[in-house]
Image (cartoon, rainbow, N blue to C red):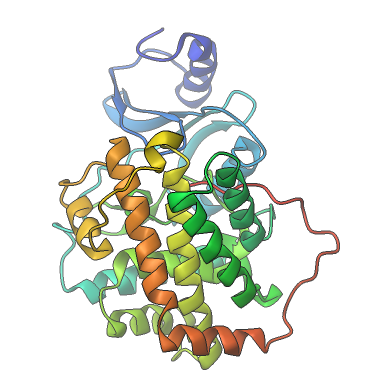
Length: 350
């Protein structure tokens, strides 16, 4: 069996198929488009049943299948991720049940707040799942991303990102009580709707982190009004949010904007990143992404998206609400300290 798989991975795929199904004969195989992780994704059919086969790309301190597969199995055991049929971290091959996804924008029934409510319930179930290993303090990881970008670009968006990060690092430090099993990259590509319920996928970025990382990601991608943001927090916590919860979400939403700006800036050529890009309103870009009218596979669009994320962070940090939130959080003596913390590693998204 060879198929469309990378030659260096054919034997590993054979082992995976034999272990999962007792055969390496496929009814069909089709490559699927992936995200930023570099993993190769395929829809395969075995015995007329579809599955998803994933082959990992490059590895480093962040892209670690040992950690990612452990998180994926834990999430599947909690029924928030598809069932795992096979996962071997040494080979970097995993097989999961295939989710025939439908559009969150076009096909999800009911008002937007119904989607926000289900997403909050799903996230709460994930965060109650034990066992995700630690990796790095999230804010330190964002700092490492800024440093990585600064190695080749301090002008233009790189300089803007560094300035925003300096302010955010002063404003936010995680409370140890908020450390949970966290996905850390809940963009809509990683939230699948099958016509009946939501599933979370792609666990490369997962580790034990601040609960407000995932909450801010959902707020930035899914909520379109203060009422929906309030519902996100109320459903997640099972009660109306308190002042500190609202403050943490507001500041972390700006961190999330910076994280995605850095992630996309890191994928474009340095010379291109120094050019001036248009920056439409982020809400307009998310609407276009939801209906397939904005393609992030194009480098120019990635730069546009990064610039829009930076603009969103600037706007959010210019408000009186942000100033009040950052001042309130700075009064808390909740820093976990530096003793025993892992060395910062650049984060990433998939």
